[in-house]
Length: 185
Image 1 (cartoon, rainbow, N blue to C red):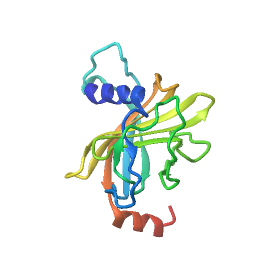
Image 2 (spheres, one colour; image 1 turned 90 degrees about the vertical axis):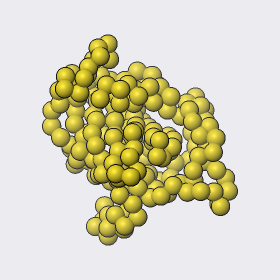
Image 3 (cartoon, one colour; image 1 turned 60 degrees about the horizontal axis):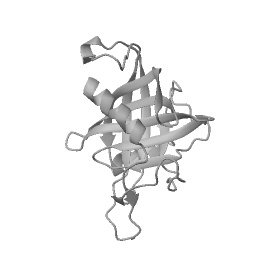
Image 4 (cartoon, helix red, strand yellow; image 1 turned 30 degrees about the horizontal axis):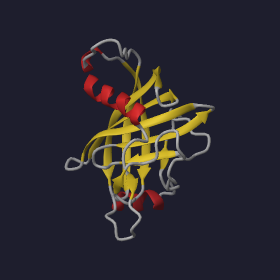
């Protein structure tokens, strides 16, 4: 658990450092993905300690659903964090967040780096330089599962240890997406 959390925290610092979208229409594409998650708020995370999963304490479980639309497979690095981000497909969105744990005033992500099935990094501005950062990693394509980590951060380098959510997600593909659209989500 600690390793997963530390990998996610390192990804927060590195978000925006990775690959770029292939320009060719014939490029390989990632599938449409719907992540249906159960996230738990970590109440005692301490980055200065080596905590085991058993030592972490959680409060309520929160339902959270994220859509990652089909996109071209990345073939090079994305813009640096200080550069203008690449355009984000408007279909990339939070589909359900009934407990409103992921404030997203603009209802859009400003930065998405999709390295499926290695990891996916998403960031949206809450206010000023305060961001909501989501990291999906690790991803088990064969099992149809993923781990989702979410925190608030400023300038992608300082995270809010009091606002850390982590949980498991069920990953479904195009058939589930069709059902979600039919249900009006």
